[in-house]
Length: 341
Image (cartoon, rainbow, N blue to C red):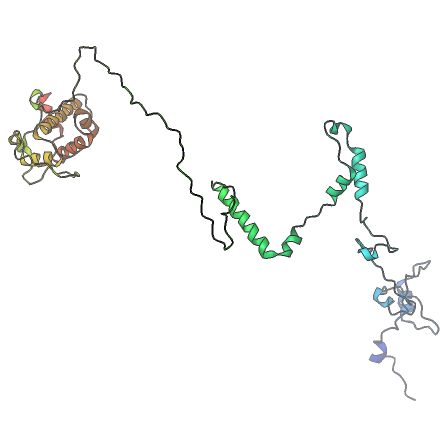
């Protein structure tokens, strides 16, 4: 007979037998010590296993116990049963039709003073309003292409009205014969229109001048001899052609036969012809510009283009071009008019 070694690794590391699962822990009247716990746990009694103190039993082991003989199935109540099962013994969670109760509560709660001028609605009308169901989905599923075409036409019409288009009333179609061709229009005689009386011409009243003042006529500004001459000498122009040239739209005029052309420098003649000014008008505007230049020097003010426009009695654009040409050859500097102070 083979003798077992008590220090054998197989014997010392053997797990204790698994106890029978229990629903709860056994309560002991006294708390044992650690030595008694260890001794009680690892001791194998001869009879039935004792109740363990730890660890707790897993709930998953309940399904394998022979005590669970049946399984209880719990079902949720039906929220809205179909019509075939409405008369079943199990009542639904919510009431299926509560329209009458809502109508009765509303009728009891409404004020009688609300219907002094008109009769109140009947209960059937309240029920009809509560039981109203939209038929959009039903009509849409009947003919989807027709529904889409009609809604697109409504959308286009709304967009046209939003953009300011007019809505015309539909008129009756043109009458047609059996073959589908339009019927000819009946030819009517000449209309007997109402003849309007001939319109009489309006008689304008003649306004006679009672005052003895003569009518003022705009005269051209050509009397340059009546103005003082503060202009720089023409000999001070630079010795190069077109020294006074400026840009101007339009064809120049011919000043070769002008009686005052000899008083101008050839560059001045070209400037006056380009601006479509005769020589007398050019000389008058030139003298007015330098008169204004002397006035601005007296008050120690800068001579600008607007001053030349105010001084001349010609087009402001032409006056601006004269200021530009004179400033180009340095005729607007102070030393030319300072000697006349």
